[in-house]
Image (cartoon, rainbow, N blue to C red):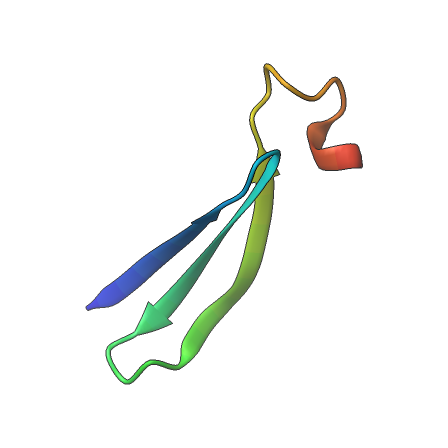
Length: 43
């Protein structure tokens, strides 16, 4: 089983995936609300 965590900020958000043991499986993936930012998360 995997656990998906989402950190919701005011403008930018980040999602990460962990396994049952609590070890991070994938590095955090930043994203933002497309309506509020003309460029994808300032990239």
